[in-house]
Each structure stands twice: as C-alpha cells, then as structure tokens.
Image (cartoon, rainbow, N blue to C red; front, side, top):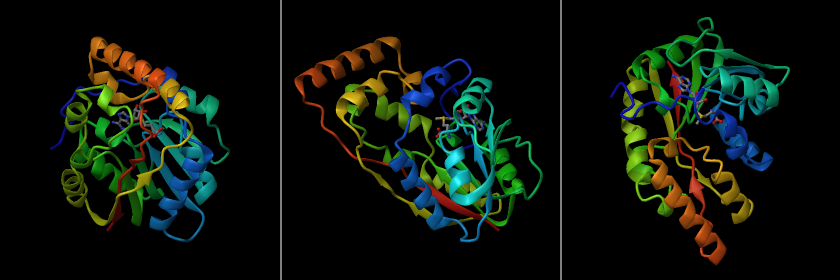
Amino acid sequence: MTAPPVTPVDYDKAQHAAYAKGRALSADAIGRYMSLFAEHLPRRRPLSGIDLGSGTGRFSPALAEAFGGPVHGVEPSARMREAAMAQAAHPRVRYMAGEAAAIPLDDATADFVLMFLSFHHVPDRATAAAEIARVLKPGGRFILRSTFKERIPDHWWRSFFTRSHEVEEAMFPSTDEARAIFEAASFATREVVFQEIPFEGDMGEAVEKLKLRAVSVFEHMTAEELDQGFAAIEAAFAAGTIEEKSTFGDFIVFERR
Ligand SMILES: C[S@@+](CC[C@H](N)C(=O)[O-])C[C@H]1O[C@@H](n2cnc3c(N)ncnc32)[C@H](O)[C@@H]1O
C-alpha cells in the first residue's frame, strides 16, 4: 500500500479555521500523551524532535517543554501553520513548510519524530518512511499515532453517522501495513501501544466541539449525511440519551536502526 485509498484532505481549503478549537485537548490530556511518549523515548534530555504534520501546533510546544527541544513543526498547509504560529508559539519550536515525503531538515537532525494523526494523509508513504529515517539519528524513535483500520475507535458520535466506520476503514492503514512500510525503511518495531482515552468534560461541550466538524472523516461524507447525523445528535442530546464513552488512541513506536 503506497497511497491513501481516499482523496486526501486539503487543510488549506477545509478544517484549518475550526481545527484548533474543534480538536482542543485539555492540559491533562496533553500531559498524558507526553508521559506516554516519555515511556518510549530515550531518557536523556534534551531531545530534539520533529512534529511531522504539526497542524495548528496542538503538540509542538508540549513536546518542547517535555523533552527540551528544539522541536521542528513541519506542516504542508499554510493556513494550519498560520494558526500554529498565532496560537502555539514557543521559544524552542520552529514551524516550517514541508511534508513527510520532503522534510526540509538535515540528515540526522532529530532524536524523535512524531506523526500524530497525519500519516494517513500522506500520498507517498515509502518516500515518507525513507525521509523520516533520513532525518532521525541512528537509534532515534518514530512515534506513529494513528487509527488503525482493524481497531476503529467507537467514538460517542459514531452511531449517528452510519457510514463513518466504512469511511475510516478506507482512510487508515492497518497496523501490519504501517509496520511493513517502516520496517522496509530501516526501522524496527519496538512496540504497538493500545491506549485507552477517557471521556473528558461534559457531553454539551463535546457536542459543541463536534459541531465545528474538525474531524477529517467528515470530509469524506456528503452534506446530507452530515446534516442527518448532526440533527440526530441534537435530538439525542436534548433527550439525554447519548452515552459518554472512552475511546482509544493507538500508536506504534519504531526505532531507526
Ligand atoms: C488531523 S491533522 C493533525 C495535526 C496535528 N498533528 C494534531 O494532532 O493536531 C493532519 C495534518 O496533517 C497534515 N498533512 C497532510 N498531508 C501531509 C503530508 N504529506 N505530510 C505531513 N503532514 C501532512 C495536514 O495538513 C494536517 O495539518
């Protein structure tokens, strides 16, 4: 598998305006991710990192704080980068134009690379894997946070959008596919991590955030499907029948040989 089987989302046209707000994470949630990543990264500090597909900079400043940095936020969408520079500036983070298959950094720049929900957007995955190997130091770690198609999370909103499971299966690689791509490019799999994510906040907040539609799955549904789904959510919320569910955020940790 070298290319995503659905049309890639162009974040300059969609998503950029609402992403930071619609996908905001609590400080606790960010802290939990940093603790998890710390379990899989070398113990020495500082560690230099690349947040590849950094978007609006949801994780870049926290990575710099947790691991020392510098952190390079590499992101192809100018609009997402603008949002990052406006809302997620940090003295040890530098945002730059680039993409996974063309990373504008020298060989052996980084101790770690994080791709957080960006790998499924990459069209040329073999080239991306070679690029990630190039910019990592030997022994460096690559953390691939993704949905994997054999373990689609059961979000609280899923049942309101009847096609979302099918769409996500088409969008995301399987764990084996992702491993094969990176193992063919001088990476060894260290661990596949299945991580539960508790439901946070209250359902009213969750509904308001979801209504911003900052979820790339929605880019692959029709306006009618979305309108029907959101109308059903509003009705269920008013009736108090939506179940708060924990979900999961799986990742694979690779080591560059
Ligand atoms: C769902 S957002 C995730 C952003 C950020 N990692 C986060 O978790 O908040 C996906 C990001 O991947 C970026 N992206 C798309 N194609 C990419 C590519 N070929 N290489 C790197 N990033 C890409 C998009 O522009 C978008 O900002």
